[in-house]
Image (cartoon, rainbow, N blue to C red):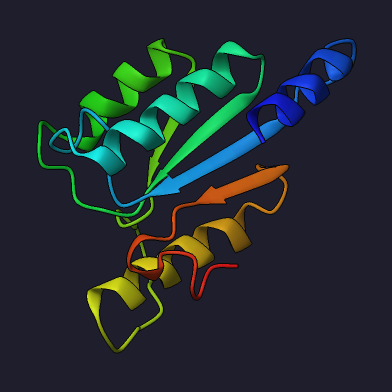
Length: 133
């Protein structure tokens, strides 16, 4: 998938670079270094290195620092960072497990920003994409 998206990025550089959203419960930095956080952050970095414009969609809590700090740090690395759990204004009530709420918040963000991502990558851990895609 990285090679195919990178080929699209190379072909599209004359026009607009492709965009990808990488959605996860954890990313390296805002969260403790786990296999999931490392893999998702590395995927985003690799895509960015290949010319893809990447948005990180974080559907988990920030355990190290705060959202503003990580937004700045990721932006300086060429990545846009969005914590989909941090919401301003009215929210749709969601009953159920935390996993269900996280999946629905990710869905809400993607629905509100339909042109942000050409490709959405969601890991299969704890059903993050269940209500989303």
